[in-house]
Image (cartoon, rainbow, N blue to C red; front, side, top):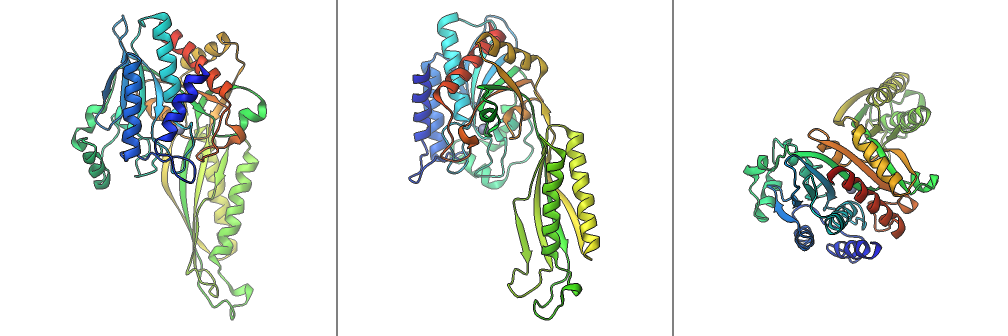
Length: 395
Ligand SMILES: [Zn+2]
């Protein structure tokens, strides 16, 4: 199995490969279209009936002997800029390889089995995060002009997006790389995901007073950036003190007027907050808000916090988790349970079907970069467990 996995992953990785390393297959680009075509050919060669939905997501279907909803596996086909070889690609290649093997060895499934190459998840070209899975769950209500134009260039009609919605999926399971270093640290070869973290994106604006850097003594300053710096340290220490899986990141800072000899009158920074438990995530946010308020009042600053975006944590379905755990056991693999710190299509699809995910270790925890790798043994092992899970669900 290792050989065919590596071969297909190499083939996909070459589509959109950049001269300085990594690959880039943004939604509706030439590389994206070529990759979809390649996977479509693989699906057909495996005996799957292929269709493309209204946003360009590719489905490969093996009809079951029973009527009823489908068992689906797969992942997203788009990548971030200078992305690696496995994020998304693994779930498609492993899903196809698992289904192909099942069809060859076990024959026609009882439940309809489908492999999906979801058109987009990363939001790396447009502000479209989860575009494919949002279309599947009927949750796209507006289409920006630039996306609509890109769709038309690929022969897709933006007015027909609602036709992509599905209500005939029973279960979605996805094999993905961990994109972190927890499995590597624990030495486990596989994880069954228990939940996908909830994320809040906040923007904090600190307002002080711009003054002359030479003539304003220290005690008379209302330095917005110095205040923001104390707040940023507080953000980090609050997350540390709450412990795993709480994380908080300040990724962007801007000072105004951004002059070497002027005391900053305004500072704006972002906070990315994540936790698998919604009340813990809200508690984290509350602690940060109150610490920022303390810092602002001590320094004579004003501050405002704006919520930019919020995604709730999504637990994986307990029955699917149990199937995945059993599949690991049947395959002789000791699997851990883990919370996913990254977002995945499963969190969107959970609104319409039962979902579950498997993670294999990322070497050095590296992901979203050309160095993204997982050992061939772990790739094969994850695919074997996925295959067993699909067998338990569909046969
Ligand atoms: Zn991914």
